[in-house]
Length: 354
Ligand SMILES: [Zn+2]
Ligand SMILES: [Zn+2]
Image (cartoon, rainbow, N blue to C red; front, side):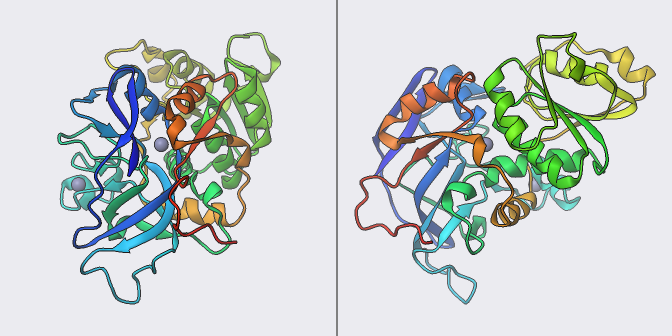
């Protein structure tokens, strides 16, 4: 089978990889679509994400959907999905026994295995491949009527839902979102769903702001235009989704006294500047948000119910053109979520239903 493999910084190849079929307890999925994430781009361009460095060839991708291709030994019974069932894949396997898992904070389990991640060695191979095998409990059949093209947003939407959950109650609130990339825009959709009345989004580029408006932002503002009237007033909640220290500064400066800042964008490694005294004297709540857990099922359900997120997907490339897809995804002036189509050239595989 073919797969999109990172070998190191700047070295991304579509190459032949072995496919062994599912082991006991696993399900094999014929992957149809995969979404390129910011972390995939980091692995490609820098050979690392934060402290996680690529030390061996790794298949990228953790936002994948497809069809059940085969069930491994022991996967049976009425709950086992039939071959050909359209499914999404929950990318995380927490350990289940550490203190965080025991406290119900499975998303911050230090031992989690996450698809397409170099956090551990050997790395966990990802899903930008024509087939992937995963433990059966990571498989989620799609709700009736949900297309693969919408379902492929379940992972980033889960990240957004988790960040909004970390913010506490957002109903009736005025919220700032810094950064209108795919995650920032999905945070907007999640805030809208959560009942936020005003959602102001900032970014350095016009195209991401246009998409943010399409998914529910009530106002947008260019981050480099300090005098823009959209900045006026204070915000009850701010969600930092740019990963830039300047975005965090905006959140800390503009959230109300006693307000909440959710830190979602992955900041540069090492120390960064912080308006610490502002956070102290205004009693701000600074909360990290990382990945998600049960929000994945909520995301699939919301996508099945028609949550408006389509504008976030801007491009689709065949697997063989992965390098072009990654280069396009890097250009924030034109691209938001870029998909890889992995169903190509695999004659005889099940096709998408209605
Ligand atoms: Zn992702
Ligand atoms: Zn754990």
